[in-house]
Length: 246
Image: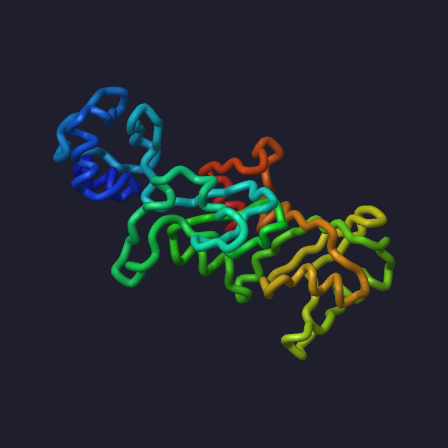
């Protein structure tokens, strides 16, 4: 692939802008300055390392990321009262061009499902539409684990109702948790395989309690790493993706 086309595919701007970066000597490939926009680069997985304006990058045909979402951020490109979670990412990840004409309106990585502004924890982002659909679709039953701090002490009856099914106000069909464990008096670990609007908060309210704090700790077989601080992000490894696929 041409070097300017590769930079364009990774979100560094228009083809003209990418060519300008290269011609100004601001791009290195394998540690060497490359000032020819039409230079051929090998984009095979895990082989291409480059830097733009001194910042190191690796080539990724598709972007798969995790973010430790902090409280006070919205999972929206057009947030309201709170800043967008996408501002936690470097600009190239927000500007990656669409891969197909059918996704021409989708630019940059997208959140795989949303977390409320006051909810923290594991958030996945990608520009792979098939991956996003698989993670979001209730047909695939991808489990998502939440650590819930409740206002009132938990009791066995509440746990039983959460796993047996509760009725929410927008659907007469009962909604059940895949698992519910009282970790402490006010600490509930809840596992869901679908993603309705404000589902955790509404389910807990339906059994007579209230969510005071909410944190997503796991998606599928992938847990939020202990060393990923709130507000930080990283690429998903092949092992991470395998854990998500189960």
